[in-house]
Image (cartoon, rainbow, N blue to C red; front, side):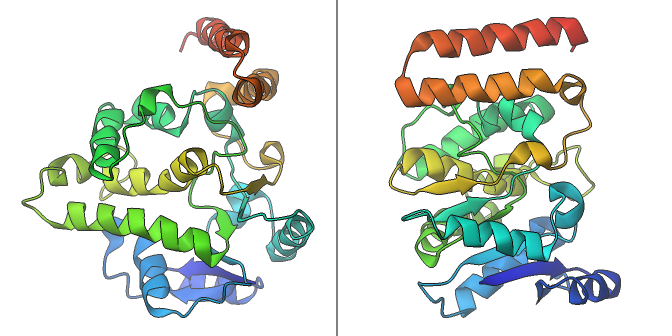
Length: 270
């Protein structure tokens, strides 16, 4: 296993050195606008990956968000090794942000209006016609913060998408540049591009069904700070309904999910 955590400064460097993860040194932080992608990109472009090994790249907040330490991550990957043909293991926090939305793009739209339109244009640019507003994702596809480990075959596919996104965002003359570099309310230099990049893995898990995932129980990880966390039963039920719909195609499951979510929105005055 090659499990890294990104060090942004001396404090995070010391913190990571005591926790078991390998250090992905980004103390120079030459491109803060790309967040973790900058050091991940540099590593994947320069490393010779072993097809028999797992690779994962986590932010310094991983332990806090996922409620998992290094040894627990290793234990979960060892369990996934017992499942035939698993390509990626998901360690996704904020299960309420995943379960109570149709997919990760709808979730992002709530916090960044215009996100789906920009993401859709990028997906079309990649040669895919799938309508992002209609995709149904459950906890087997949803992953936030790039908190997953995967075999090199997946990372190569992921890099094809992320490098195209990188090129579009870097070229000020590209028609997608302005939409991708649109500022968000997350932080001063947080542009839409990093949140779209964060959702590429989830999209690939849907449109490439040959990629097999194993999701570590997200309900044991950190939840969001929104009102969705106040009634966790809705989260459990809604993820189950989306899972049932994906497995069977029975529209009743999807209709019930929509009704359940609307019921909660009204109760919470969202």
